[in-house]
Length: 323
Image (tube, rainbow, N blue to C red; front, side, top):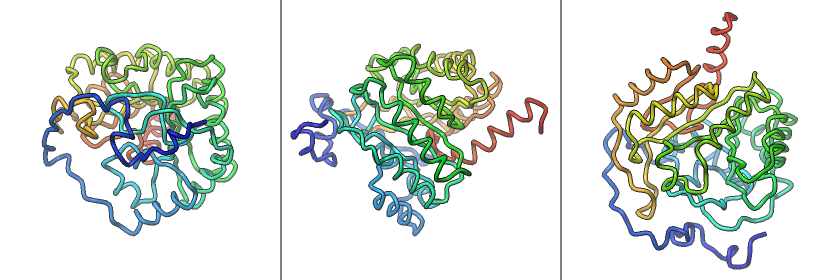
């Protein structure tokens, strides 16, 4: 349960949103190139989606992480639900989600998520969460309950989960999520292993890789997905090695997007990767055997997730000779 001090925080203020970054020196943010710029959200569809989220007291990673695609996705009625609160126990230097001690889990949240999915009429929903290192199972059972609630309320909706790494949890945590049978199990590696100490200090690269591999061992038919950001300071060879590592873990779907710096206190953007470089990464990834690849400056884990899921399913059927 959050303390009184935590509850009094104003998460709209960067210094209170990210107390662990308050003493970090400001870094100069590079001017975004033309291919990164997006329009401010203001459509009727955007407002309708926003209102449904507010009415159901739900948090979205679209807003919390400052996703540049929020206008486009919400205008189409697509939103990524972020469960288990809006405060994360990790302090990754790239992430704009608030950090600190989270509140207790809300037992009614799975039902509210399911209601919103039904009301939005979603064909495909992405459910993600903050890290919950304060919980013995990392929130795995809460994620499983949310999957089951959506299945009950919207049986025609396919479900994608973007999970924490369950680093400090028993093996049963991952098993609980897989047993709830999401259609896609997503866990992002985020960056190349050499940058983990700075970019993702609370995580372990090979643990995250093993998590994805373990999903396939538990359910070989379940689609697995992972993503990385580029522009953090990595080089091309390191990115290609991550692709090889993912394929060794039998990951089906790879996303690659440009890292964008949320505030001057966050990890600096080393450079903006060009659209041609993204096309080159996409070609290389397909050549390594991924069933589906999304690589572009504005690609995010849940960007066009529903359409990509259909392509993913068709690609597997074609591979199995069922097309």
